[in-house]
Length: 121
Image (cartoon, rainbow, N blue to C red):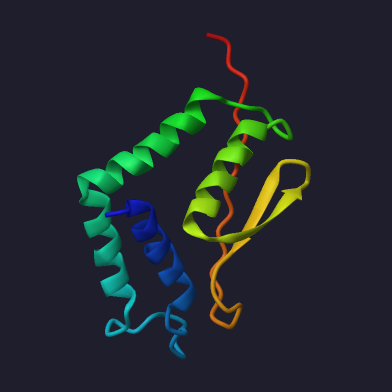
């Protein structure tokens, strides 16, 4: 099984969360609990875990400072390409902006930094 596809399905699900109730929260009967259980179940799968750990290790093998994240940006774009996710590049030199879904409400946004701090070892 291709677990990058599973990650894509989990990630896409965030874009289709039910609207908030009038009280400003999700009803307990909504798909949110099911989504959380599905994500936890996938994270426990050894192959999925190894895929995620591999990406994290690749990122940490090549720490890059701000506006110099060329290898990290390429890794992100390669993963998005393998998942079939549309994106815009470059944004602010090395940034990537990706989108999934119909852009209809509700909308979920996720921001992540790619840069590393220079450390003396």
